[in-house]
Length: 127
Image (cartoon, rainbow, N blue to C red; front, top):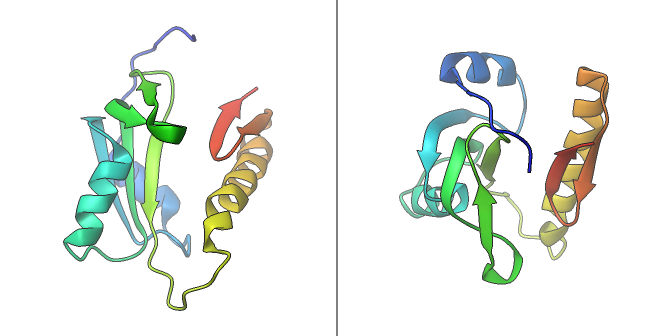
């Protein structure tokens, strides 16, 4: 495991950097959260708009595939969920997280001039 470092996220800076990104309309940033997916689900049930991005420095009750516990300690990653509300249902929407992960890994590699990879199905790792 990587050594944790002090991490501070500025919601205004993150929102400013995401301005103009078509899929992101609203950003919520947390230092520590139970699970970005759980919060995204609650927000969706409460009528939050598509494009709501939930970011966290730490998840205390994250879950991986098959309901396994997901370790998300502070300072070693950026954990997030994006709430989407597609206008038209489609049988292939389940592929979207994998496509977005690969696209984001390529964009990060280019932007940071460093290698990022995807750990199936949707984890992005700094190689």
